[in-house]
Image (cartoon, rainbow, N blue to C red):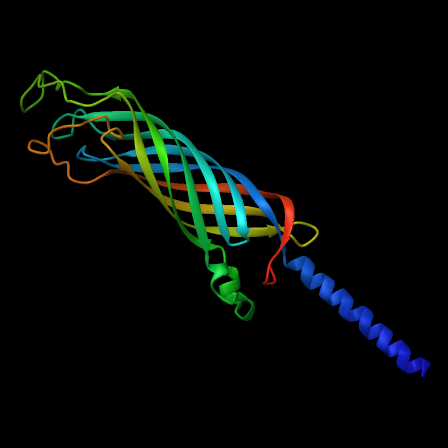
Length: 243
């Protein structure tokens, strides 16, 4: 009788311990913030874009560990063209800043990664989009063709604004690599992200020329390729899957 009671007690304690451990592994922090930086490439009305830089800060609310709603602020330089090699002798440097609201969905939300080591390792893959505003500020731009231009020297001014606000739509594709803290929680993230930013208006390159004279048929875009670091914090919430 005592032996059976002891067995039942030990089994109960073991089940409680295992259940508690599983529950701990299924908890996550509701917020994260992060910083990052990288390069960007412009695709505008200017014949050829060139590389600039992007820095950013993010604050995310985690609906689940793999679904987020957040804010992202950027500061950087977008540039393109070359006064010597551009067919119209145009070039620009845009020292921009932007803010956007976004949503992201990660692979871990929609697949059963517990049964596959491969899916578990890539559960941080994600896609996202959002809406925001970009503040354009031209720190260098060619408004008049130089006197030595091979075609139509001295032409100008090229129409456009040195300062402007445009609507911005970012599209993100990236990967989060999760790092646990000493208690087994997902606490740190190394983030790799590719982002296409579609701007609506003619402010990104500072040129607003007539499409009858210049090719001007699509939104101005800059793609940013960044790496960053994020930290989870805030209240703890339970999740249906083991993390």
